[in-house]
Structure formats: C-alpha cells, structure tokens
Length: 441
Ligand code: EPU
Image (cartoon, rainbow, N blue to C red; front, top):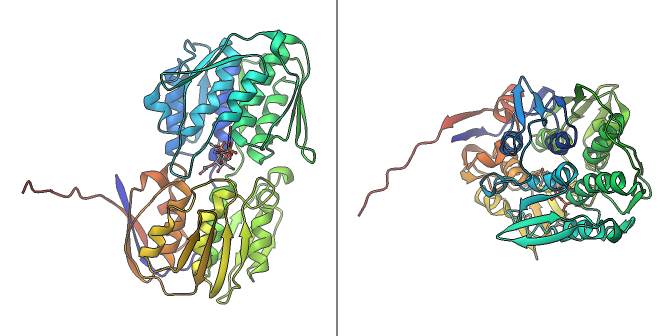
C-alpha cells in the first residue's frame, strides 16, 4: 500500500475538476441488475469502492468492463441472487443490491452488513420495509434473506421513521417490483432526497420505470411499469459533491484560492447541491463567486469560528463533518461541530490531536474545537474515507512533515487525490510503504 507524505504548511491555488460521484454511481450500478441489457455509465471515479462494486456484480454473474472512467455492465448473464461475504464485507453499499436482486429474481441473499468505522449503521428499516411490501425476511448464518413475496401482505403506503439513504434505494427497487407484480401504486413517505437518490430516480424514469417524487414533502410514488427496452442504456454520472466539498474546505483551511468546475445543469450543480457549505463558508468570511460553470473560493487569513450541525439533505452533509472539524482547527476561537446522523463519526479526531489540535468530543455527538493552534507534522493514520480526508487536510496546514498510512481508506472514495492536491501546489507525494522487520526476540 502507498503512504502519503506531506510537507506543510501549504496553500492550495488553481483549478479543480471534481470526479464523478461515488455515492451517485453506486446505486446506478446496483440498478443495472434490473435492466436486462447493457448499461454504460460515464464519469465513474476510479476508486476502490467502485472496483469492489464491480467485483460484486461480477460475482453474481454480470459482465463488467471499466475503461477510461466508463463502466459497462451487462446483466444479461446474471445467475445468482446471493452476494458473498468476502466482497460484501469490504463495502456497506453492497447491501444496496438487496432490492435490485429481488427485482430480478424475486429473492435475495445478502450478508448482514453489521456496524462499521463510523458507527452502528443499522438496517432495521430496510428489513421492515421488505416485510411491509409483502416479503418474508429471515436472518440466517449472517445473511439477510428476502423471499416468498405474497401480494396479500402488501402495504401500499409506507412511512419511513427516518429518511435513510440506503433504505430509500432498496425501497425504490422493491417498490418497482411490487408495483409491477400487483399493478398497484406504492407510496413511500419521509424518503431520503439526497441528489444521488433523485439522480437514480431520474435515471430510472428516463428508462421507462414510472415513479414521481415530491421533494418538499419527501414522498416517492411508484407506479406499475416495466423498463423501456433498449440494447444499450447510457448515463453520465454527476459530479461528486463530497469530493468537491473536501477540496473547497481544504482550500479554505490552507487559506488558498481555488476555482472548482461546476455542472451547468442547475438541479445537480455543486452550487445547488452544496448550498449549505457555501452558506457556511461565506458566513465565516470566505469570498465565493458563482459562475455559470464554476465556483471560485478565496480564503483570507482571518476567518471566523463557527457552529454547524450535520443533518439529512438539504442540510450540512455528515460526509463533510470531519473536514469541517479540520477547517475549525485552522481558525482562531471556539467552533462547535455537531454530528446528528452517525453515532461514532469522530474516530479520526485522535489523529488530529497527534498533529497538535485542541478538540474535545462530547458524547460522540459534537466536537468543540479550540482553533488557531499551530499544528506540527506527525505520523498519522487514515481512519475511514472522510476522516482520512480530514486528517489529510490537517497535514496540509501543519508545519513540517507528516506521513499518512492506512491510505486504503482514502482511496476508497478519492480518485488521484495526491496528484490533484499536488497540482494545486501542495508539497505532497506518495511512496511505497516500507515493511517493518519485526525481530523474534
Ligand atoms: N439507519 C437506521 N436504520 C436503517 C437505516 C439507517 O437506523 O435501516 C441509520 C444508520 O444507522 C445511520 C443513519 O440512519 O445512523 C443514516 O444511514 P443512511 O441509511 O442514511 O446512510 P447509508 O445509506 O448507510 C449513505 C452514504 C454515506 C452517507 C450517508 C448519509 C452511500 C454508499 N453511503 O450511507 O456515505 O454518509 O448515506 O448521507 O451512499 C461516505 O461516502 O463516506 C459515506 C459514509
């Protein structure tokens, strides 16, 4: 594995082109299973989680080809409705395939995902929704088995108790199956409306599946339908708002000046999908200019400390919470960052403390950052995708050399991150990790 060496402090300057969205591509890849044809997705980031999803699809029999950031999935040869634990254990999004496998086979066996590095990520609502939709649900040998659809047991109007992103994806695929089988409309209330979800819905609608959504009311309605036949379905992925937000925050933490390329399609533009981030940055004194297809950020030396709380879209994203904490360490005064989605998303803070940050995490709910202290380079370890990105931002602001290990976590979500930071002027490079010889005494 490569480790990342960074010599700070740095100031990021220049132009940045975001990668295709990780969390946008994953559900579209899952949806390929419901189309019995070839699907070509463009602008798919070259990151570990995408390669894991590709292997999972190949594991159930799909043929996949990844060339120049385009991924072609042929689900015609699919033969299995069971995902192996070896692959599923690498990525929680494997659970998203539950709904699309059921759509295709009427049955799915998917490993129970368990907790992870950012908390106890439950799937109880996925299971409850499956039962509400008329399926029998069992847990056996660590697998969730959804099968034996009975139209008599279908509840056609279901209210989520929280707008879960993952449960909304599975409910969409299961709902399409049930609407098709029963010829009835299925209505879901309190669904997730993250842009990556609405993009999936738009993609499905464009390809013949009938659904409509109301963003203000968080309602999804699914009508009886079949996919439109096409020998090749093509789709362009949206920009990754979390990668773009990470670079925007890195530019501010290093008091830099960057221009981020934006999508000119208003609904999925970063200007819209990251509006809470732009509001926060402008409230602390960052100058922000919006062009028709770019966003320019200029961070002055003195920024104001802040308070922010994560919540479901359109609020401030939890996937930018760790990066916001790193930004706060660079700003004099007390900042408070509240996490309200995950129950253990401050694991990375220990690594920021190693760099000299002054942060108190209270009940795993919020971080109180006493910012403006000089950070010093140190050996640090990436904890998870976004925590790893936050640690990397802190190493950019720290004085001296930092060596970041366990970079696998960062490469799960960020394509060519070192190359991109280096182009923006950071003194950063990758090197092959030396294997320590451990003596036997
Ligand atoms: N939850 C339940 N029961 C459920 C489902 C969820 O209690 O049945 C709880 C979870 O325990 C968690 C919260 O609801 O505390 C949010 O979970 P959600 O289902 O909304 O998230 P997810 O589908 O597991 C996706 C992203 C995450 C992102 C969250 C929130 C993908 C592949 N993952 O996860 O992205 O943080 O939504 O926006 O889309 C990342 O990219 O680094 C990442 C973690």
